[in-house]
Amino acid sequence: MKCLSLRKIIVKTNKMATNRTFTMLKPDAIENGHMGKILDMIIEAGFDIKAMKYTRLTEDQAKKFYEVHAERPFYGELVEYMTSGPIVAAILEKDNAVADFRALIGATDPAEAADGTIRKLYAESKGRNATHGSDSDENAQIESDFHFSAAEIF
Ligand code: IDP
Ligand code: MG
Image (cartoon, rainbow, N blue to C red; front, side, top):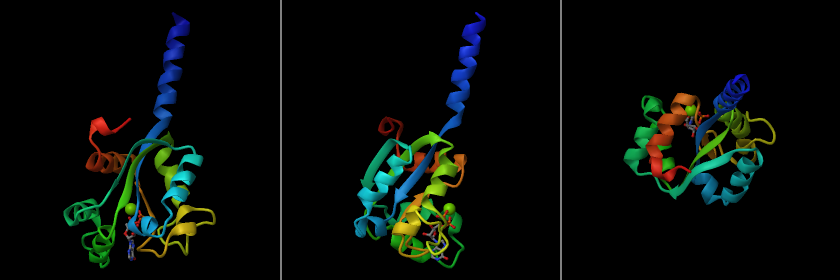
């Protein structure tokens, strides 16, 4: 009995350590032929792909996704860019997924991104910066729900 409850606690603890984040390979990454290399970096870094689609955002979707930036001067440019071509949207799972994925993609501006990060290697500029990564567990959930139904997550 004692052994069984200890096992349950260990399983629960392990489960809690694993979480999910949401990413988009943005239009510049696709346009510049970096889709395969970026996906490879994500998989090599230990992220499991739980859901993935190749799609193009409508203007309404892009406006809604980046609603938090609606008052920023770059909002119009951002919506135009994010709807300019196809993207790859995906849900990724790993221990500490949100923080580890932000570390993998690097700073918003590639000029400030660390060496070896996705944005340092593949982003064109602060605006056209190759890859999105959720900034919190809560937003990862909201953004995943925005793009995927339960039946599309494996
Ligand atoms: P993040 O993607 O690193 O979280 P945020 O500040 O949340 O960065 O901005 C969302 C997106 O808006 C950026 O990834 C980038 O595409 C765009 N963006 C942010 N700041 C600027 C800017 O100063 N000029 C143009 N586009 C920007
Ligand atoms: Mg952000």
